[in-house]
Length: 109
Image 1: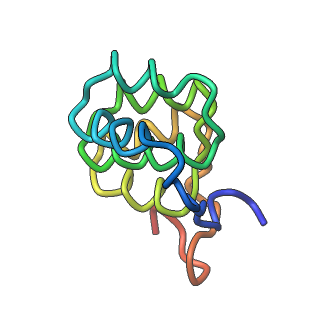
Image 2 (image 1 turned 180 degrees about the vertical axis):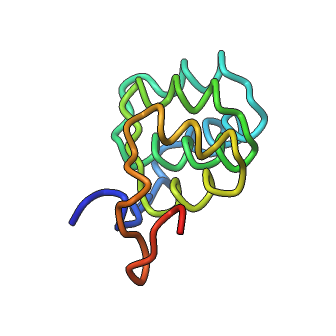
């Protein structure tokens, strides 16, 4: 299944006390902390951070997280589609607006 049709599962992060700090840094656009904590993380937590950044329209941080290994998922496309800048960000990273998402719909009808 293409990644934009699936949701990444964060899993049990109880053994990772920095995960909550990482996600908060992504939400508050604290790029220095987010990128420091992103180093060495698996793609799933990075994707959650990416989605937090996009939800808050922190697209510069989203770009840096994507470069660090975060992958899109359905939530990424959904969050980015809430703003013109978010859709532009998706397009710049190679998203095809004609790709079907949930229930066969497309990003731009």
